[in-house]
Length: 144
Length: 198
Image (cartoon, rainbow over the protein chains, first blue to last red):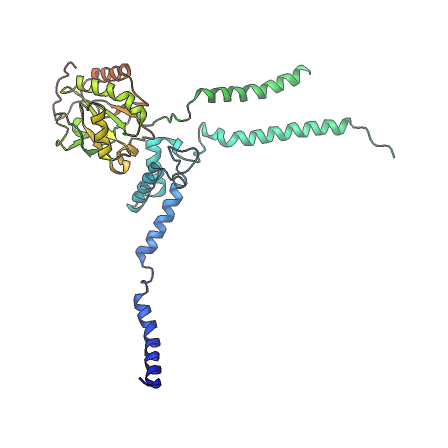
């Protein structure tokens, strides 16, 4: 084979490569793929708000336990079936109670969870302010 | 220290100590179930163990809804659960006493392999009531199960009357069953069988 033919063959291969590569490339993201990513995002969002029943302070999103995996699968399945994130959370609350929510809603006794730290902060600040005021009032002015 | 300062300190310290003391009396693993008083989630589960001739469905599956009008004890267990070993002789014994009556026992296998479950039942000397498989723990989640063993008592009205967490004792089992048996069957198209002595 002459050098000219070799160059021609090389050029054909070079030209054909992008075409072949394009054919073997994955199809552009379809609506179903985009839908799946939305579903996964929603699943993660809901799962991160639900407490793992067999762990200490972990969400079912973060827990590797078998029960958490099964609960995550159920979250995904219910979201895929068209239920809203609130409906899905409501389902788990109806089975496990509000305990299953990592951030319990602020009503009834739950309000204390949110109010007590604030009250403690205000009370602590008041005590510190009173003490500082007494100290400064009792201190003698420095004579120059 | 003047009395005002002491009163102020006590007013802060006493509620905090009382709150901590109350917390010490609570078991953080004991999650209050919202299920008692509500309809028992229905299920149809495949049976892999012995099955009593209860009319609960085909011999290879059990449908909870078909047992409405009777008392049902749903025990959730696993072969890897040590506490389940403690309660199994009680369940087997009491279950066999009530076999053929208006009280049905069902054992739901939780996050376990059916072969392990079958082997465990053999090792434990058998089981007088159906053992059911629960793929994906769907039924367990439907019942708000977070650990095993857990036992649910379903009344004649199809509602969960009581949930017991941990190994169940004979006295609790008999007391709850007899309490539920006293409740008259709900009127339905299917005439329930009359209560029989265990």
